[in-house]
Length: 58
Image (cartoon, rainbow, N blue to C red; front, side, top):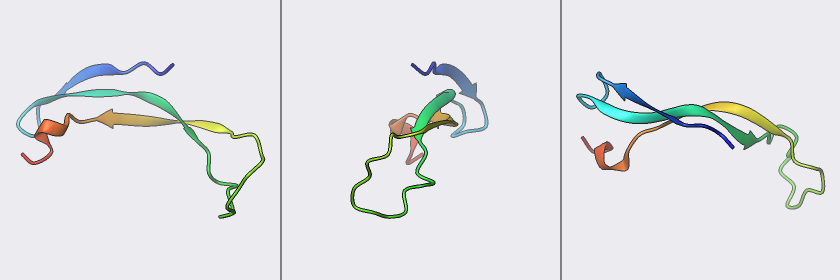
């Protein structure tokens, strides 16, 4: 389970708390655009920064 931590960004929207952490996403590098895939999915870690929706239009 990924761990997200609150982090204050003073220069983003005049100051807002975001959630940051590393999450797992499915590696789609071998997808090849087929409709169905029977391979076992592989996962990779990627950084995430979640910005509260209420400040998107600020």
